[in-house]
Length: 66
Image 1 (cartoon, rainbow, N blue to C red):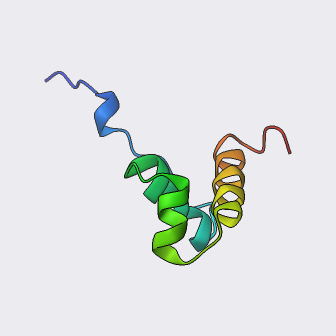
Image 2 (image 1 turned 180 degrees about the vertical axis):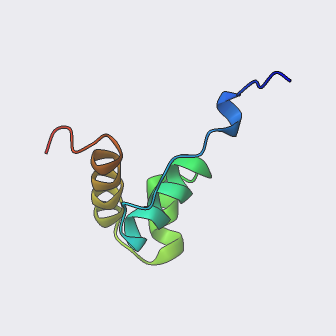
């Protein structure tokens, strides 16, 4: 039996993110919301959404740049 993986089957491990970071990361990166659009939808400021997304990306990259 041969196993083949696909990039489309890969799911990132988001368990190291806070709930807020995970929520923003999933909405913006995975679901395609714009940061400002998502900020309006959730009542957060665009700056807050941007900060949460930046922190999430840093954690997922292993803390690079922090």
